[in-house]
Image (cartoon, rainbow, N blue to C red; front, side):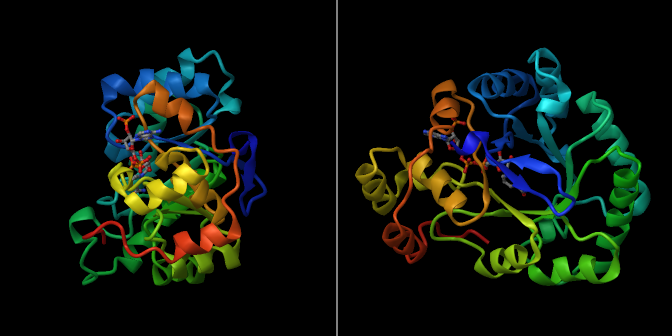
Amino acid sequence: MIIDEDFTLLNGKKIPALGFGTWQIKEEDAEQACLTALKAGYRHIDTAQAYNNEEGVGRAIKKSGLKREDIYLTSKVKAEIKTYEKAKASIEESLKKLDTPYIDLMLIHAPRPWVEMPLRLKRYFKENLEVWKAMEEAYQAGKLKAIGVSNFQVDDLENIIDHSSTVPMVNQVRFFISQVPEDVLKFCLDKKIVVEGYSPIATGRLLKSKAIGKMAEKYSVSIPQLCIRYVYQRGALPLPKAVHEEHIIANTKIDFTISQEDMTALNNLKKQIIGAW
Ligand SMILES: NC(=O)c1ccc[n+]([C@@H]2O[C@H](COP(=O)([O-])OP(=O)(O)OC[C@H]3O[C@@H](n4cnc5c(N)ncnc54)[C@H](OP(=O)(O)O)[C@@H]3O)[C@@H](O)[C@H]2O)c1
């Protein structure tokens, strides 16, 4: 069962192999969604400053009855924060909102502010190193147990690797059937950077894919289950999101194996979603 398995980070720490995504879960619903996920067996929750739900996530951890050290908690420094001082202050604010003495994994949410993500005009190499410095310091102080990035391309990663003393331990990237960032995946796996696959169901849009539906039927699983298992079999850590209890539970039941032949067919599937950057 992948829900019981771990990936190992470059610093030797373990990270549970299935994470619970919380993007677009409102602050007032986050507590209940996370409590349902923890009850269903998830031990890894993915939030972000930009999701505006850190307080709800923190309350769920407190109310779950589980020990803090038994839950793996990720947050992210806002993509728009690109100075050392602002990054440092935002980490303190996350610790406060999550009501925790430490965060297991903190990521730079994106290499550029969101409005600039589709364009690659300004690359923010210098600014990302400033944010990274604030994260390295919080890591050294034990406030963050691991640090990494999200939405980074190979050259964004090389910038950090070449100009700092800490290799990012994780790169969290958009990752779903027919739209896998192959170059980033290969680079990260070669460097032992854990790749987390976000939006494994393409934020629900893959639910309509006839080709994936046909393959899911063959394994007697749902489209989301096939999508999540696919991410895992590609060597990445899947991060599905759901608010409905039946979805939250179903997404933990991915203890089946997609054959090599079918993995190849899924790898070669033509793009299912139009317009994704
Ligand atoms: N780093 C980044 O920039 C970034 C960006 C995007 C996402 N993420 C992370 O990745 C997580 C997941 O990505 P995502 O939120 O885009 O969505 P996703 O996991 O690809 O898809 C979620 C959608 O699929 C539905 N769903 C989930 N399981 C289902 C099931 N078993 N049956 C039917 N429908 C199901 C959900 O429905 P209900 O909610 O109605 O149950 C929701 O509408 C995020 O929450 C976030 O933590 C990170």
